[in-house]
Amino acid sequence: ADADYSISDGVAELSLGIDPGETMIWMNTFPVDPAGQYIDIIKVAYGKVGGPTPLNGQSVTILLYEDINGGSPQDAVLKWSFNTTVANSNTNVLNAYRVPALLIHGNLVAAALYKNTNPIRVYIGALDTTPPTLAERSYTGYAISLDPANLDAIPPSQWGPVENLGVTGNLRIEAHGRTSVDDLAVSLTVGKLVASGFVHLVWIGAQATYDV
Image (cartoon, rainbow, N blue to C red):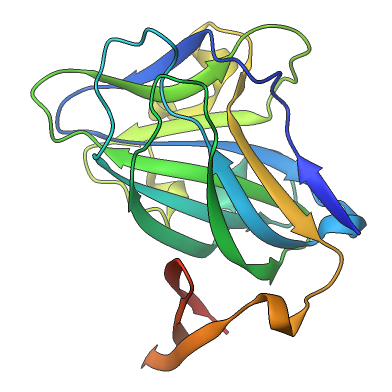
């Protein structure tokens, strides 16, 4: 058994932008389904069809958080991150990123983080504005220096649900989870300690460091 986590109809009508020199994080929150509590995939779309900004090849970080108490995910705990580059931007295509089947309790938060090193404003966060939409399920924050492991440090005026931006909709970020872990499905090739309490894992197609 498994579960798909999605609150988008598959098309982004708007894209959220970030100014030069700033970092933006954008995310969707989902109550964990017992049929999919081991998260093994995060999917992210970038920009919108006809979007003004070339995005492919630019650096982006995919993130998975656990939010036990629900509500605003600003206090969520970072469980996994993966550095990659944008692909299929401005096409409505969801890019799938493998996660090493991590058990998440309460609410899962699937997110992406982008630092704008360009001299112009970049429009990257794909936003679906057509019904059905769910309020206070899609959040965004920005800062000059943004630590994804410490979202509480983002100033209140620079953090909140997308409704604070004067729009209604949900971000095009999805996830997939499984009921249990099949050890054969997670092919680990390297596992080593990189710091006290942390393990660095490299598996087919991705790598991550997370606490154990």
